[in-house]
Image (cartoon, rainbow, N blue to C red; front, side):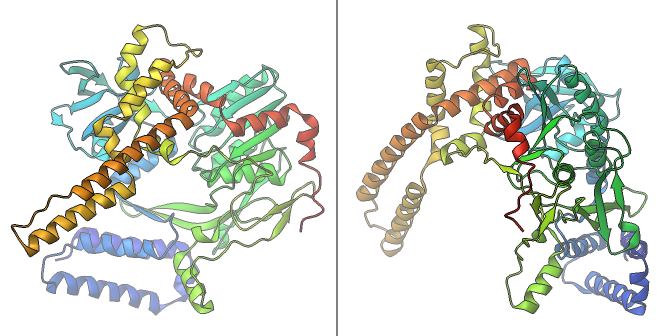
Length: 571
């Protein structure tokens, strides 16, 4: 017998398509006959399949199949996922105020958030969480841990914490509070003339928080402002508008949408006077998406500021949240696309509807990934800007390129692990300040830390791993042919020793090439773990080549204004 869940979903599908409007109605009996066909398939499988399959499993699979032919941003949310979505967009939830990760099968504190219960009680980066209440956390999934840590404000949770250097765990009883996620976590003057503000996402209060940060910066009389939207995945449309109108004149068009239905086609204008009218640089990269692209596109089309960095992601689609039932199941459905004031569609073709791309490509006999077009659009001042999806910067400044060795150190969180292990020892030798210098002795200690047997094994070259596999295969083959055969592999062992020696030499060379990078990363981690996120951010900005380029443009008025001259050689 089919579960109640199946009927809820089928009913919700009908309701959802009905919301989309007259096009479904126009399809008449065909649409409903297709739903009946789905019903028959589910019934036959459930009644006759060789093994029992629940209707919940079948419907989840059907939903997954539907998602597979749509765009990447249409999603189905179960109640837990939907609560996570609301916490992200609303910017607050009941919890402790810690970011957690997983290391060697244990949950670990990545960072306590300043001003939260966890930070006030002294939890530190690197602390192992052995138990949550009475539940052992070994191999616990991060999502499950988050569910246990979050809860109603005022309720308590008990954590068993093992700190580096301690022989026994310590128990912390922490009272949950409303945790507010800072979407504008950092704002400061970088020097006497340039202010900087970072926006990490577009949540419920982003516009309001940014206005306050800009107001505070204005009191310090900057000549220009850097608005950093790098690594910003987007968020709420109304907050993209709220951020944009802090820089644009009143009534300026910020963005407009187009969908299949008239109700999905709207224009959004600034409703107020700006807060900052001076020089502006907006930093973006390939992880700047959605609302971040709305803001950077509006600034560019109105010639309001210089967009600098790297091409953005090209996620320019509007998602509407449709409730499926009263139990928290929901559908995030793409219903329209975003367009900048000049008419550029922000969405790249590869982020669009999959079945349409495949159908068009099949008809044309081509690959399913269409290339972006190269249509030029015109800004308010007559400059030519490129269409085709995403935002192309006015000034391209590539981000720092890391060597493969450096990427591996970051990926394996070697700097975090090293500083967590050595923090007490380092602090005991003297106070950590922003002027702290990473000593040669500390670099040597990190060197030894990386080259321990446990860690070094992860840096084996592909050739060495391939040689190991070849040796094992050779031994097995000899044993299969003759169980008494000699399987000593002198030649293989010599080759392995030679390769390992070469790898050691390569690692030594990588240490020499990346010495400045390693010192910077150690200091950044140490500043964060002892002085907090702001200290780390301030330090990292000093070594940020894109920020350095933005400062140069803001301090040189002639260079800044040159960007806004008409580009007559394009188009």
